[in-house]
Image (cartoon, rainbow, N blue to C red; front, side, top):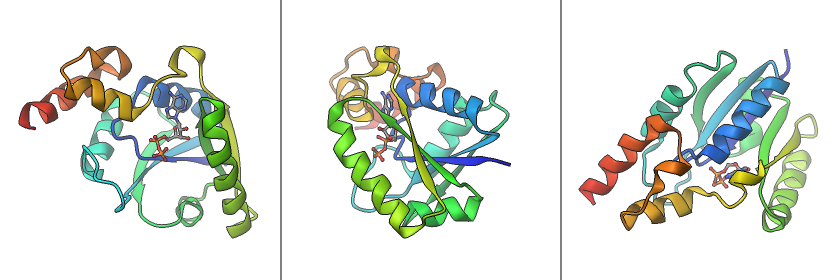
Length: 160
Ligand code: ADP
């Protein structure tokens, strides 16, 4: 079975991420979304919250499962049996970073390759960071995230 891993922060998941998940899950037999526990960043949502939110958003896509990991992405890919790492490319600015990352990963484990999905143009500008910024200032962030994520974001900014 061809399994792919889509790693990322997903803090929070946006419609851009969801678009990549839908497209990648139609190409691979199984897609694991791996939530990265990055100690260098202070996230809005904990890893546990992000996993729960992703499970809710993906509940109707049967060949997608959610997990979380720390450390090297290639190690987590091996752990879940994935031979492909999926990443999304928005603009040329993503390219340099993603190229370096994919080449490093291939050096670390030549059996795991990276495949890129270019963003659907309506989501090209979209990032988790901009969603958080808009929500923080009380702007209309709702149009950028899956419906089931809206209450979680509202709840967070109510407390801050
Ligand atoms: P990271 O912190 O690793 O960049 P993100 O959660 O921001 O993780 O993104 C995970 C992946 O999804 C990355 O490959 C990123 O380029 C891609 N991605 C993020 N937003 C979009 C979007 N709007 N369209 C397409 N791909 C996207």
